[in-house]
Length: 167
Image (cartoon, rainbow, N blue to C red; front, side, top):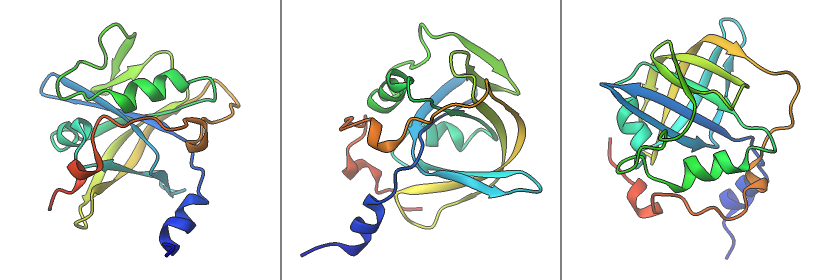
């Protein structure tokens, strides 16, 4: 028996981003595939964070996030931020990081923006939606995004069963 929702979602081939944040001297970051522009004027952006993720937990204490758009040659960054849990490991160790607007920016990823949280929606699912206003955006120019189909079968740091957390 087929699952119509799964069939429709498999047609998506979203671009990938790394979201970073910090609160109380703790940095966090994760690979995200659920994200989109939410308003043109004013400039708003939505990102969805897994409730099982360390970045979500730190994000509850933070109000700013960096959104790093990955280019096709950034597969190693996707692997790093998807397959390692920040709960027990400093994902930023050994990486060049610049702090700006209280968020860690990965200097090797120049296509990015800094956003400030407006609201966080928890509808009872396994992710929360962060709606944010864009504070700053920068790019190195045109780039081809790294897409979900480009990463193969990366094994996420958290199992699916860890994602169901009631609001």
